[in-house]
Amino acid sequence: MRRIIRTMWTALYTGLLAWSMPASAQYGSDYCQILDRFEDPIWHAYMGYVDRARIEGFRSVGMIEVGAGSGLLYFRTDFGEIDLKAAVDSVFFTGSGDVDMPGHVSAARLDLSYVIRLEDGHALRLGVEPGFYSEIEYADSDHLFYPFSIHGIRAFTPNVSGLAGLNFYPGFDRLVDPRFGIRWGISDYLLLDVFYPKTEIVFRPNVEWAVRAGVEFREYLEYQLKSRDDRKRLMMDETRLFVGVDKLITHDIQLMFQVGRLVDRSIDFRRFEMEKDLDDAYFFRIGVGGLI
Image (cartoon, rainbow, N blue to C red):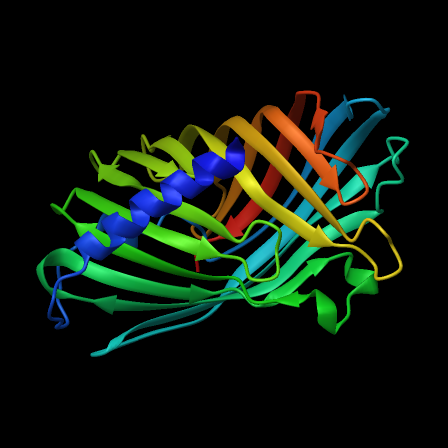
């Protein structure tokens, strides 16, 4: 059923993407909430814990999440904008769940995007995320993948911008995942993102504090296992409900705390005849980020 839904969204938003591109292009200066309003820190690191949950037909397993990322290079020319970042996100499993879970899986990657500004508030963003999506200590050339994306972006007004596009995962079991939604900058203090896969509302009463709440649908988590493992790959789905608080502790460093619940979860190995459900679980995450 999930694959049918993804296929329908893919067809729909491929059409929207084609609709959003004008026939001719020239560099413009229209303010875009998606491209010009910077909400994420330039660098960040985090650690989190997911409570133990039972795998359908097996025992329970918990997870420890750690990760970090940083901007490496950004420059803007008359022909477009180049943005290069690096990130690693890892999941360590606390227990085997009676299915011999791997010790951990990671996505260690670069994130390169190229934005072309077009007329009338339109833009085209091309991206590629080469990296290892695997058990890093067993990674080899077969675990190097090149996910890429194409997104059409439009600034409808200075306060409202939309996005429609596709993310492609060559070599993965899930080849395509859509991306779409609207960002509404209600004011300098309030921001609403209504996107797939992540919808979020952010309230900033002042420069020191931010309060956020949202939901994230994560159906694109896939990792290669060591070559001698007959399960081949690990795939996980989850929906993440969360609330969080950010606190600026110096003029350029902020603390970030998030808590919530994981629902609608599943896990899949090639060894299983079909994916197995995971029970719901609570999680928390704490992190630090830099604004410069």
